[in-house]
Length: 152
Image (cartoon, rainbow, N blue to C red; front, side):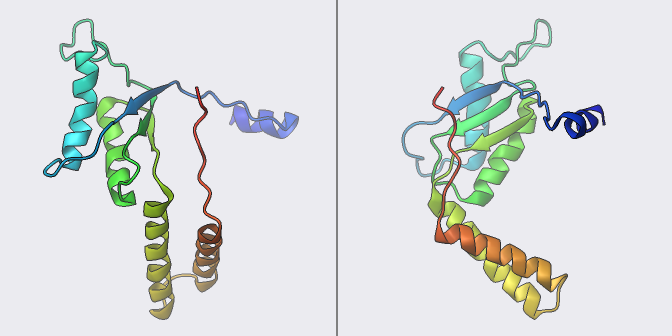
């Protein structure tokens, strides 16, 4: 593509970053609240704020083409975060990030390491590739550092 050729020639890759919309949940998740309730709370709050409209005429959609940055659900399991971020497509968002604590990520990686070791024992795939992935996950688990969003 043109962007790749430009990067090859100049050593710089211009990237157009879409704007983002911060979605911040507060409080503790109450018993009986499902992940689908969280998914539906996002457009509900936007409708209340006048940032999303239901009628097609004069349609407003603050999420359209933007990145959803979700905070306040730090203890979600990774699988729950995957499901919630997948639902960002329902809002016509370009993508989604969810700020998680280290613990659910560590749990997820440990589970993946067990699965990869089982796959190796069962003769699946390229053993060298799986061992490299295991080593990378174990290295991160030794010094777990997460990226942080900018303050603004």
